[in-house]
Image (tube, rainbow, N blue to C red; front, side, top):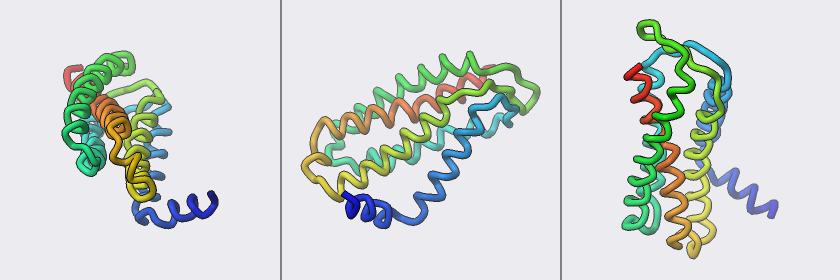
Amino acid sequence: MKDLITGIIHGAPVWVWPLLLLLVLTGLRATQERKVPVYIIYAMPLLGILSLNSIAALAAPMLAWPGFALAYALGTWFGWRVQGRWLLGREGDLVTVAGEWLTLLTMMVIYWLGFTRGVVEAINQDLWTSGGFVLVCALLSGLASGSFLGRAIRTMRA
């Protein structure tokens, strides 16, 4: 087991560790009430690009893409709904938002699903090609990614 963990840590591209640190710090900052430039909230849906790469690499694209699209739409709706609770005010290009843990959670879901997909592809081809694995990855990625779009839309309309 130790060799497996060491292999995963050393086998990952170097850039994944600074990205993880950046996402964790950004997510922890989101747990505090803060004033944020609206362009940052508008840019958050770009984190979905990380998901697109993972979905494109899944073994069963005919299952992955429809699952991702459906979950993305649901995630967008969910993000739009919850962002209303967290918008405390807007002054020009600044938005005051309440502290929340969803940002950290969704960033970690997107990051770790991509990481997990790569590890599973490398060590367990049977699992990687299974419909269940593909569907779970697609659905979770879509929900997390879509939530950022919904939150940006809600902020835009505030």
